Image 1: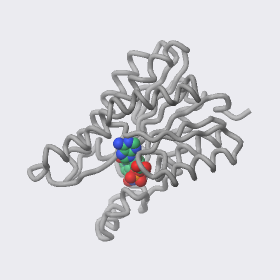
Image 2 (image 1 turned 180 degrees about the vertical axis):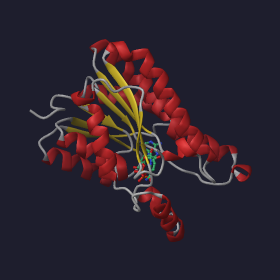
Image 3 (image 1 turned 30 degrees about the vertical axis):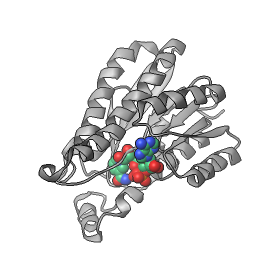
Amino acid sequence: MLPLQGRVALVTGAGRGIGRAIALSLARHGADIAVNYASNDKAAEEVRDEIRAMGRRAEIFKCNIADDTAVHAMGETIKKVFPAIDILVNNAGITRDKTFMKMTHVEWDEVVGVNLKGPVQMTHLYLPQMVERGWGRVINITSVIGQMGNFGQANYAAAKGGLDAFTKSVAREVARKGVTVNCVAPGFIRTDMTAGVPEKALEHIKTITPMGRMGEAEEIAEVVSFLASPSASFVTGQEIGVNGGLYM
Ligand code: NAI
């Protein structure tokens, strides 16, 4: 029997990149998947079909996770298909990079809205039923930037650092209820998010990363699947770095 057989996982921002790899990995380990995505119907449908081809259940749910009303409406729709969510992976994230003194309130709010408020809303929606059922996993995708800070990413670093602090607090609150709450903090991973980074900057990132390369989305996904599995039953309140040694 696969470790996640009979479990249902909801992954936000699962249409591409790390979220897509997480959805596929969880499905490979036996879970049925609710695929949340923001805009690209075709990409989400492809993820759904790939999961179904593995013999798992999968449905897609379009929703901007920064929008409270939309999140609650999505929750109602999901409930009709998957009455309970066992594993919540808060993966959706955006960047709006600029040095802090040039950063606008809009750029601040957008990044905090998706990277921090979104996971908070999603967790608020699903944590009570996990506690009630006595089993659950919340896995938040943070970033090495939240741990180290970065030039031009004050909004993103604050949101990700805040998400880590949120994780640890909630982990303490539900630790005796069978629910674990953890973060995975990727280093620099080859996805659309980093595709726009200039070649020179990418070379610099490789130079400062002890392993001398960027990571792949699947290398994040496998750590998420481990945290979701029964093998990680004594792991909670942790931020696990998956960064090729960039931050130790
Ligand atoms: P990506 O840009 O390829 O994918 C992000 C996904 O989130 C997209 O499918 C996008 O549509 C979705 N999304 C964005 N805003 C949304 C919203 N409001 N509601 C629902 N979905 C939304 O990025 P990537 O690289 O796959 O990033 C995934 C997560 O990993 C993010 O939280 C990111 O901050 C984090 N991360 C990525 C790193 C990297 O080097 N790629 C490094 C560290 C962390």
